[in-house]
Length: 308
Image (cartoon, rainbow, N blue to C red):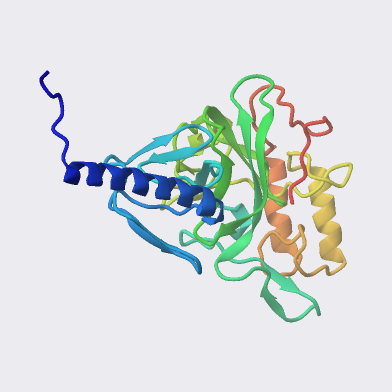
C-alpha cells in the first residue's frame, strides 16, 4: 500500500513539541489571563511584564481600521479595553456680549468689587463670563435635547463644549443664554452629524433666528447678542428688554450697587448711567427674543431653564 505520509523521528518530535507548546499556552491563559490588564498592542506586537511573568507578542492583526458609530469608536487590530468609551462631540461657538464689547474685535472681562472702590477680574485668564448653551430640536415644539451651563466665554468670543453625546447626530438649533442678554437662537438648525461643530454668531445678523443681533462694530461688520434683559415682573429674565429692566437698573444705580451683579452691563464692577443707557435704548427699540413659533422653552412653562 502507498504511504500517504512519510513520518520519521524528527517529524514526530516536532509534531509532539508543537502539541506540548500549545498546551502550555492554553495552561498559561487559564493560569494568568485574568491577572492581565487590557493593553493596546499594534500589529507589530509588544511586550508585557509583571512580577510573575513576562509576555512577548510578535503577531497582531495586519489591518488596523477605525469604525465610528453615533455612540462608540472601535479600532480593529487593537486589543480593546473593557467596555467602550462613549463617543462625545465638540461644539465651538463665537459670540459677543453687547455691552462688554471693547471696540477692537474682543470683549472686556467682567469685574468684581467687594469694597466699593477696588475692582478685580471675576474670572481667571481670558474668561469674560459664563453662558448657557442649549440644543433644541428642529421640529415643533422644539424641545431642548441638551444643556450645558456655566460655560466659559472668552475675550475673543469663543465658547467650547466637548461633552455633547455622540447620539445627537441630527440637526439642532443652537441656543445661547446669558445673564444680561436676550436669549438667542441660531439662524437655522445646525447639523451635528460630525464633530467638531462650529458656529459663529458674530459674522452676520442672519446667524441669529430672525436676524436678531445687534451690529456692534460697523467697521468690522461684527454682531453681538442684544443686552439688557436682566429682570421681569417676577424678577427673572423674560426674554425681553422693557420697563422692568429699566427700573431694576435705575434702582441699583441709585443705591450705588457694585460688584459682579446683573445690573452692571459694562463690566466695570459698578452700576451707573452707562449701564442704564444700554437698557434704555434697547427697550425703546422693542428688543426681545426671536425664536421658532411657540417653543417649549417660553417663559413660565415647564420648559423654562435658568441661566447659571
